[in-house]
Image 1 (spheres, rainbow, N blue to C red):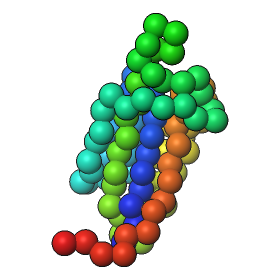
Image 2 (cartoon, rainbow, N blue to C red):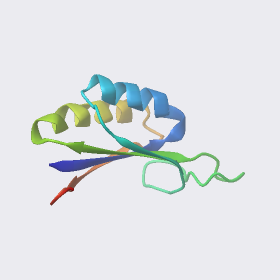
Image 3 (spheres, rainbow, N blue to C red):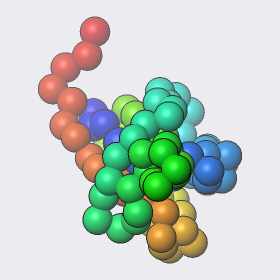
Length: 96
């Protein structure tokens, strides 16, 4: 099992959830109102100078589920090039 961590501009929340659901995502945990700065977008700090926030999804995936979800994230990244869409894959060594 692996954990797919996806971070993106909160204003594309509905679009991201729809894309990942269509790609096979069934279960996830979403974190809202996150602040941060990355390489591919302006900072999202929810201030007058740096408006906006990020959302993050944690999606536990089995080996056969990962590729379709990553393809969906890549498509969203292509559509929203300036919004800092990023995905990371983390190993899951155990769960309870």
